[in-house]
Length: 519
Image 1 (cartoon, rainbow, N blue to C red):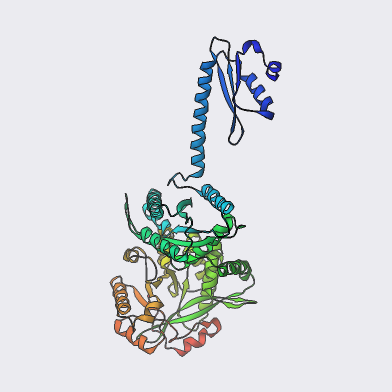
Image 2: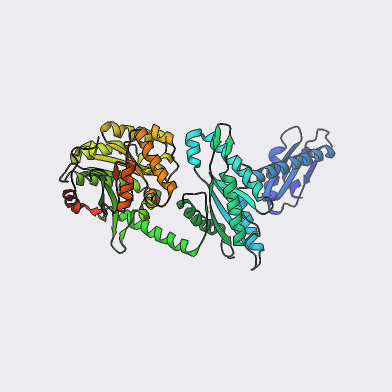
């Protein structure tokens, strides 16, 4: 009746309504009026609500039967259904790997939380690919994509019917363990994932060895949504990453407490620089044969007004995560140069620099300005970097280190032997000093393997014409062994603990002085 009231029926032979349209009838009527101007049949489809389609088929008067239009309408509906299925698949699946995506994961966890009883639970594993950025930087993003595809296939095959794999984005995946909730079974599953992910991948551009870090949480609380589940898994994943990756950690309540403490620490750290709560201590490095202080390493400390002195291992990772390391790093360089310029002898000073600081394009110029302001000879400053710097853009790092060395600043590779660097890095980067990590000094007298490794690192340094410093010397026996290996410099508690800036003068006067600065 409404159609007759609004449409010129002399030009309409058939109107077919495929489903109840209710309140949407006026919309369909006015849309139909816009369609009847053409001489041929017109078909249009209208979405009323998700999963509900209203169809209107309009046939012009030009001798075309209802069956013909009905076939066209049926074909159009089938096309739409196929399009809907395709769009639904694309909305719930990752384009690169074909795995279910974050939306699918949220729906899966929601169904589990709504359908489960008090006795049921499941395990959620948050996986992060180790050294993925390095693959992108060195082999290109196509190789990175190829690695993600290969990993997703390998892990999906491993999970089989016991679980389901999802890709959150980037190099993060989630495995949902179904009804596998026994902790021992989950440990076994994690170990199998670590083994499979750690096996080499033969990509088009070469072989890659990677690995995954895993954070595990159990889904048990009915009021726990997806964001909370992933937050817990992420806290556990952070612990796995701190342990140098390729391992797994289970979420615990203590992790949440630590996370809250980290938030408070981040807040207080933002204030610490302005309130002059940061300060430097210095630990000497001596010549093994002469006993003379060759240089002092500047070590950052934080005097918190309530918590006392906070070690750098606590707040430096937070500074790097928040980006505050750029301002803090500049403060360290400037103050180390100013304080070293006032020492009673021309002893060198070493400053630790985070890989993130090389992302600051003005860093090299800033170092030059600090040297000039302090009146410190460039040869007295050593920039110390760890092997983690190789995970940053290697070209940027190499250019920065080369520019610093051209100024006369010395470059040291710190904590050598604990990271993922290769011998090729020793050839690529301009280094003056190799600092062997303290962990080797601790074990070299008891472990023949560690002793051979220290000897090998010393010979490697000699080959590349680099001075060798060993950290962590605490006993006379260790010092005697280092002397037999021909290592040139040593650092550790046997020589001196780190001392405040005000005590450096007395420390230098108590040790014999070198005849000349190290070149």
